[in-house]
Image 1 (cartoon, rainbow, N blue to C red):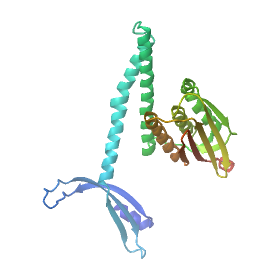
Image 2 (image 1 turned 90 degrees about the horizontal axis):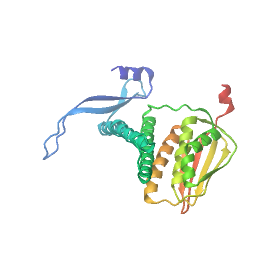
Image 3 (image 1 turned 180 degrees about the vertical axis):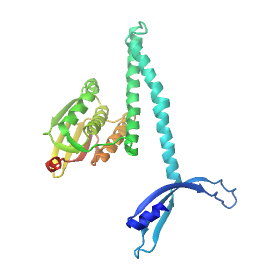
Image 4 (image 1 turned 135 degrees about the horizontal axis):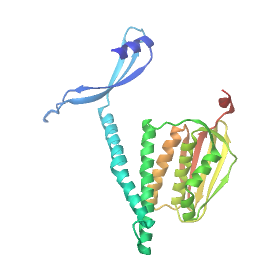
Amino acid sequence: LGFFEEVFKTGKVSSIEIQRSMPGRATHGVAPTEGGLGDLRVSARRSVDEKFIVAIVQDISKRKQLERVKQQFVSMVSHDVRTPLASVTSALSLIVTGVKGNVPEPAKKAVAEAELESMRLTERIQNILDVERLESGVLEIQREHASLFDAVDEAVSLVDALMKERKITVKREFKDFSLKSDRYWLSQVFKHLLISIVESGVPGGTVEITARDCGGNIQVSMKRSSAVLDECAHRYTELNHSIARTIVSKLGGKMNVAEGENEISFILTLEKFELEEADA
């Protein structure tokens, strides 16, 4: 009742989600289903003549159930997968460093590779959890002043070991730009895109990063030739694309992906930080 009173008083279009008991449903030839709790979305506004309330009620039970299943899955991954995986990684590290005694060199090499893959899997799980938290609003993004060069530089340092392993270098051809963004999450965007590019082909080559001023936005291009994707690499790079695209959207920007026969490139459109905003 208070919701409708507020709508009538302010005259604004408002919505509210409520949970209430729902009756069972009967279908011809089928036993009726049991009733239970259901989710409803009520949208209301004041009528033109300001005498009545016009309301639309939607049954959103299925969508809310999917959201709850998703939350349960994320919680399961966070506690039932990530925690034991951390124990496995720690145990492998102890074996590699010799804390648990000497092991033959071939065995040590195999354990070291297993440790590396375990660490990569842990990072992927953390990335998925971070994106889910971003989408649900648990993790907040502060869109303030961020240096494009600093964000790229930080991302390159995070992927440095992988690039050396794959014998890939980064060529940066742009002056520094000020962006209305969050430096940490912006560097995460470039990190995921760099990982995607580095993993998307044979070893060797160069990743070219350029940027140009497009009025109120800065357009950043990342490109690598000789990027041949196999099926396994494609699944992994798609995950990185999805994570990067989600973050870019939260930063108020856009991301496009172009995959040619022997080339992969990303075009990011990000909002420029105006000096007037700093003075305000």
